Length: 134
Image (cartoon, rainbow, N blue to C red; front, side, top):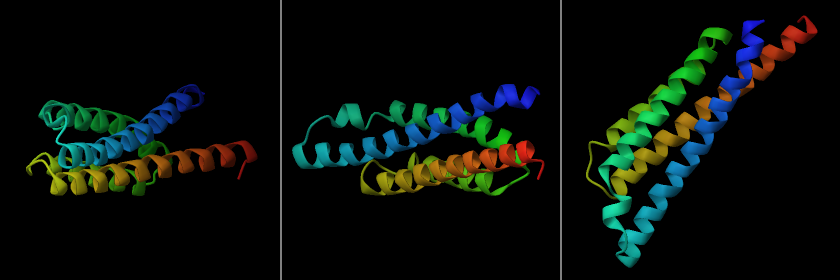
């Protein structure tokens, strides 16, 4: 009963994680294009705090939503994939701004997003099995 009440929260967190992953990838691509192509906004787009806050949000959302899902569904794959993505994102903080950072970040957010998608699929599959008695 408690899981049914909490499940919509976890789904919202997974969807928020997917949205934030996409926004992060877009930020990386736009940063490279605007700064290298036009020489605009380097101090804003490459501000270290933006990346630190993004990693913190990604870690919190993925940790809660995907960790919760892993415990509920007993499926490690979404958790392992998302944590691998967070590792890439953390690695991006250790390299200078530019293409290397963007590549590491985009790989990371793609993996985190995939973890959220798999978590949503497992939640849906589990809910169907519980309703159908399978």
